[in-house]
Image (tube, rainbow, N blue to C red):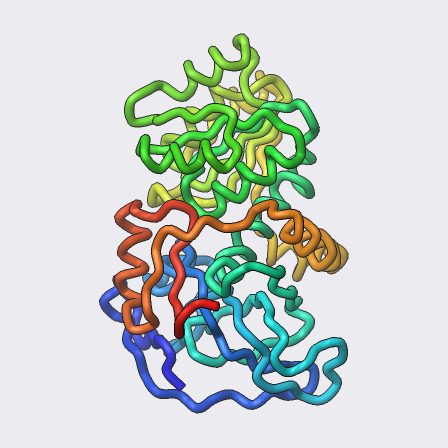
Length: 330
């Protein structure tokens, strides 16, 4: 099989495609013929050596995908060869075949969804669900401010926030991309390149501010968000696509009674609460069947253009998700 390989850390140009043996499933495992794999900003960071999880070299990037079960190991119940599934792996998705544990967990690909849509679902949906439901406990009628809303995890938060009954204000840096966000459920959109989002949020909330702030951007955006927060707001630190962490002003945290919440969905399941994993297994398929957080796919690349997919993310060209397709999507 063909697989994308990173054998040295660096920019996207270090990626190459090599021939690898098709894996064999062990007990409790399945091998999936991959139809498409989602490309995420953490993949870029992992290849650069800048992510908190650092796989041993060489490795195949990619943490999510969708495809059909090709082979089953012993002790696998409830699945059959040919079942269409959404999977997660740490890492290894950028290959024609991938071996995963059925406890990962596997999700069934919803009827009518393409492999590309399935490949773009898991990371964004799990991050948004963990953030808004488990961490912030977003309530109906609250104001949700979503930064980086045109990205995969941002757009999923917009969609889920709207489904949960929040009033959603979304920010981004490009009017055309924000128009897509608006079409996916945002009540208002703010281009923070051309407008002061703090002033806009205050104006839209009669001076109160946002109850929950979802920030995968970091940097100055997170720092300014303190001033856009309502008293008692929950500030979700999701990532740093701006390039680095922020300085959180403790006086704002104190004076406004803020809660600053770090978001690491997968790590929380592994370290603290396996029950949350069961929650994902039940709730994410239910939401997917309702069409909630169905990904918007703006870019598709073949496997041998993984570096171009990474560059599209770095150049801020992607709206929603970018995927690698192993073959024609079905």
